[in-house]
Image (spheres, rainbow, N blue to C red):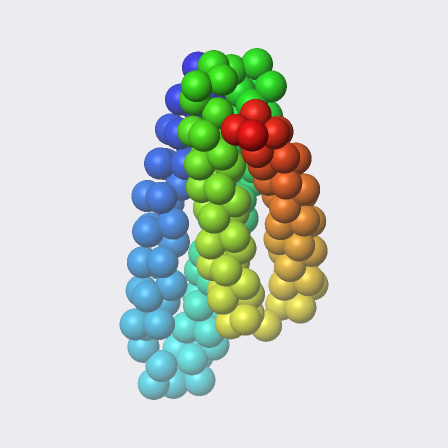
Length: 146
């Protein structure tokens, strides 16, 4: 049940990420003839890019919840499927690392330094936690595989 909920959340975030990217592209397509149009376009790009950075951060946060389930499976699950737990941990780690790249590429386009700094710190913290959880689960998996 918990795993299915996480799966559903992550699938919804895929669609939201696509919508966020489209908003950025739409903002870049706004007219830029007059000074007023340039200001409006710039504000729209900044706003859309902030949104586009927040979605992969949500992906990181959501995917990191998988580690709890994987740790439980590693400790109490069917010993014959322990390799699947290892694969799941690797996939979770890759998902978090990939989403972090997507946050960072969007942050590079922003002018709002306070926003950039706050999101960059969240990315760092989630990435560090992910690495710790991955290593803990991998240690259990390797110990059970032998």
